[in-house]
Image (cartoon, rainbow, N blue to C red; front, side, top):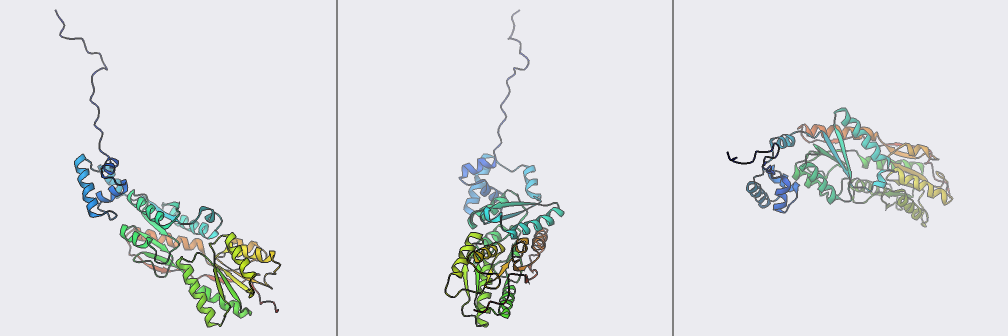
Length: 357
């Protein structure tokens, strides 16, 4: 009896190839946009034009793409992370105590709430805005802390458009509708100049930080106003970038001028320590020939000789306050503008009445 066919060999049945589901990358490739833009369009978020949104939705429908229920659940869940993008060279962050102390305070508050800190160094404000867009599109963070507020800062409207919860560490003013935390730098600088004048100084200079930063502008305006009020006609501000190298160069120019100042105020402790070194190299005695005041009191100010008179505050507490304020915004509370403690002047061995010449 003829066989109707060869027996089937176990394990050799013909299997159909599983159909690959369309992905967000497939939609992005067809539309010629980024995956972030697809995410904005599918989730109804700002960040893409209406024409682009409709084109992306049409392509998604055409290829049969729809976010899975798991992905939708994931997008609705909190990331339990806060973002901090810093537009500073990494080498500066490694030596500037302010940011290390600020981050330690932020971390302490976040860890107590089981939140993580996502930190990224960026080269410029455009890159920073791109980071915010990516973090928010990918649900990497629930909110961000914004440092180094600038004059006419384009990050502010970008964050408002994204509707990304944020707290700006800086001000007052220039923060739009975002929550902010700030301290009164103008009052602190006025107190410092008045203190130096009370010691007998009439030629006072200032080594400022980056001039496009909002707090630098506030300090500059305050310095100019108080010096004019007190009749200090030789008062001058020179600019630097917060590094010891540039702070030292600025100090050398000031001390080599015909009208050498008898006191210098520095916008951070790193530049002040560099200025102290330059003064000593040039044969000047601190404080008899030159008084020095540092902004942002830190352990470094107390380790040098003589120890530096400094403007200081509890920076870790400042960071903790900012983190707590951001968590409140993430929880849905209204954005607030909070004034933190004013920096306090602590006189030490680097300031004294000027030597009579």
